[in-house]
Length: 150
Picture (tube, rainbow, N blue to C red):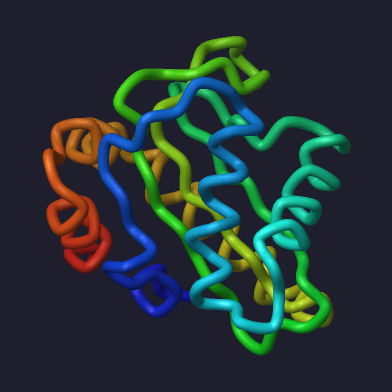
């Protein structure tokens, strides 16, 4: 699945202030709630926290892909943010995180969920994409980075 079909400019934010894992997940949930009218920010946050309790979604190199399944959601929704400073996120390499690409997917779309996670992981496995994301100075630039994916 193409990432630009999940993301919009209003769910992309650059240099967000954040001071903890929970704070960032709360901010992501509030951004997503605008797109998922059938879920409250609290419900979205709970879905992310449930997943984090299984194991951290911090994949290393300053990147996290928090994700949750939503039972009253019709289509996947993504939130892409960078933070103004790296925060502790219990990543697999124990390094702080400053790039977050969050996904909320319908409960019954397991295959789509896996394919979308794979697309995000592929995008961030390219170190150039990570460098470009960190150099972005506006939400528009960050969003354009995703649009430019070939």
